[in-house]
Amino acid sequence: MTARRGPRLVRGSVSFQLIVLLVPVFFGLIGFAVDLGRMYSARHDLKLAANSMAQAAAARLTMTDAAIENATTAANYAITTANGRGNMYDFGGGTIGESNGNLNSEAPQFTYYDTASAALGTEGATGGEAGSATARHVKVTVRGEAPLVFWRFLSLAQEGRLNLVAESVAGISAPVCQACGIEPIA
Image (cartoon, rainbow, N blue to C red; front, side):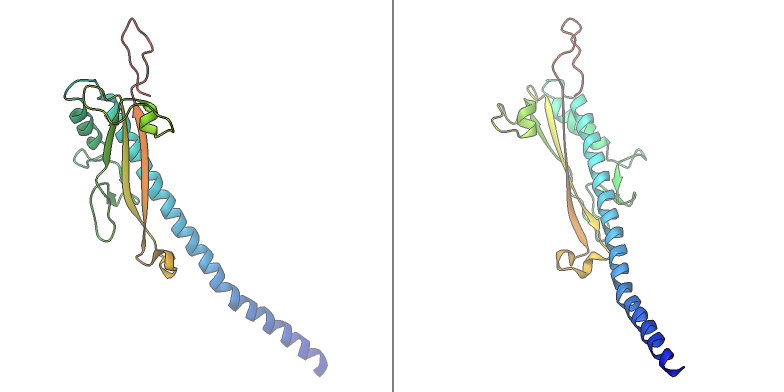
């Protein structure tokens, strides 16, 4: 009977040691998933804000002298919280263009172009940055930071936040109806 007890005790201690070694691995994977989820959520929110700002600005590009000023005002209305519905990020806790606590977000950057290929930055693009009378496309760049909890232990993210950038391009497309003069947003 004494000989049978020995192997059972050894097997039990090996499984206990394995559990002790795997617990930190499981917590590490859970932490990785939480931080990755928060990062993707913040990036999605910034991209959504950039898209709405670009579409709002493109709708105001009327090729007049005040077109860029009107487009910028309309785009900024998409992120203002004065109307109670501004686009925010980090689960609604971060206002785009403002800093709160330890997260920073830069004011959006608007660049206006006369051609879609110039706005998209395609190789061999013709045209470039445009003035109010010739602007037909807008490129919006939004920057923000995603908070990290578990990745702080890595040398990659010692500050506890990760910089994110979202860009969106929108503009007025070619006329659909020449007789009507309709120029839809693309």
